[in-house]
Length: 156
Image (cartoon, rainbow, N blue to C red):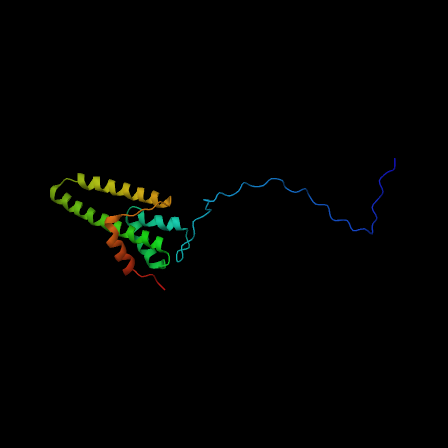
């Protein structure tokens, strides 16, 4: 038996490396989207920008106007939801005024309460649908949506 010989110092020896990691992460599914794209003019993810106009109350109406003023026309989906949300908020505001007037005349606020609850539930359902990326189109508001999208021009 002979002991192993010491390597010659003049021969190049590659540095010792740690063993390769044999674990490979699972493949990313084809439908996986890590984040929704950001909206130009706002700098927030698209799903948030599409959801904001449907927030119940005046917050949604203000968010709709701000989005229509800031978002360029190239962001068609976000502008559509902003215009549709503003038209929906305006329709709810008008109908709430009608029900309040009827309440003043009749002294009965039952219809106003039912409409307020129904409109809030509808806006929440709209928020959930848009958040999940499902199509959300309110056909009776088509003309108002197109008009608002055309008339409210984004800033340059």
